Length: 154
Image 1: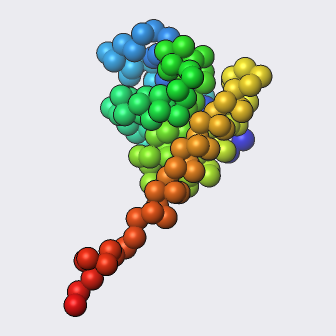
Image 2 (image 1 turned 90 degrees about the horizontal axis):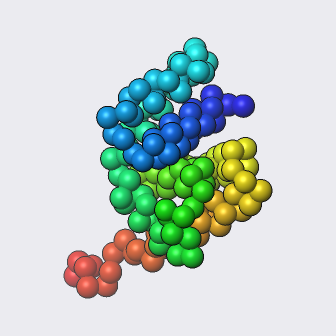
C-alpha cells in the first residue's frame, strides 16, 4: 500500500470520527493527532498532506457537500453511509480543489477506499458519483473556447 494511500485512509478515518461526533470543530486537532499516532512513523512524509487535506475539506465542507448533493440527487448527503460520505468528500476535494492530484488518481483512490472500508456497493456508488463529476469537468473544459469571435482583434 502506497504512503499516499495510507494518508488518504487516515484522512477518511479523521473525517469519519469528526462526522460521527456531529462535527465538533474544537475536537478536530485531537482526532487528527489520535489517528496519526496509530500509524506511527510510517506517515511522517505525509503529515503535511494529511493535515492540509483535512483542513481544506473542513473549510470547504459546504461547497464539497453541495457538489455531492448535485450528483447524488437520489441520496441526501445526511442519509449516506458515513464512510461513503467522507470518502466522497476526499474525492471531491481532490477533483475540484487539489490541483496536485490528477483527477483519475483521485477517483481511483476514492474507489479503493470505498472497497476497503465501505459496504458491498460502496465502490460502485463512489465511482458513479465521482465519474459523473469528472465527465462534467471534462465537458466544461471542452466547451470553453480560448477566444470567441467577438474577442478576436481586427
